Image (cartoon, rainbow, N blue to C red; front, side, top):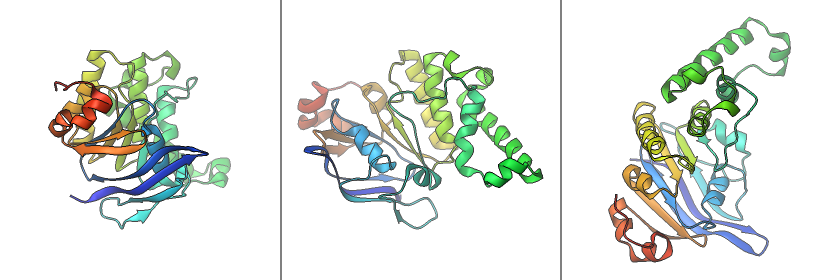
Length: 262
C-alpha cells in the first residue's frame, strides 16, 4: 500500500507553547487510522496543520492522491487542500444551522463546481445543469449516510447523532480520498456509536476512502483502527496495531490508565 499522507517532523508553536513537537507519521491508502491522546495533547492542532488551518512552524506535509504524484501542501489555504482531496469534520459541530440538510451537503460540493461568478450571475444552461447535478449528487450522499428522511429539515432541528452524520455527509461532498474525522462519536449514545462504526466501515469500502480519525471512545478506536498513533504533550509516543497499543506501558501510563478491552 502507498502512503496517501506523509508527515515529517511536524512542529507547531504558538508563541512559547509547542503544541505539536516533531511528529512524523504516514497513513496508508485504504486504512482506517486513529490519532489518540489526552486532552490538550495536540491532536486537533495536528489536524489543523494538515488541513491548512495552521501553517506549521516546521516540518513537511505531503499527500499522494491515488494514481497521482506526491505533492507538498504546507502553506496552502484550506480550500486548496480540500480541492486536492482532503475532507474533514470538526470537533465542534459546524453546520449551517438555518439551512436544510440537503443545502448543507450542496455547500460541500462548492469546491467541485466549474461555474464562476459570471456563470452564477447569468445562469446560463451549463450553470443550471451543474446546479441540478449538484442537487442530485448531494441527495445520493444523503442516501449513503441514511439522512434522506431529513433532507428538507433545517440542520438545527436534527437529533444530535444525525447532525454528526450530516457533518460527515458534507465532508464526503468534497469528493475526498482522505477523510479526517475529529471526534465523530463525541456526545453519541452507545447505539449511535455502533451505527457510526458501521457507517465508517461501509464508506471506507464502498467509496475507496482512507479514514484518519481523532477519538476518545476507545471501544470505537480499537474496533475500527488498523493502525493507531498516540501523542502526549505534542509528541508521538507510540504507534501500532490496537493489540500493540493496548499493551504499550507508556500509552497506559500516559493515557489509557489500564488495559482496554476491545
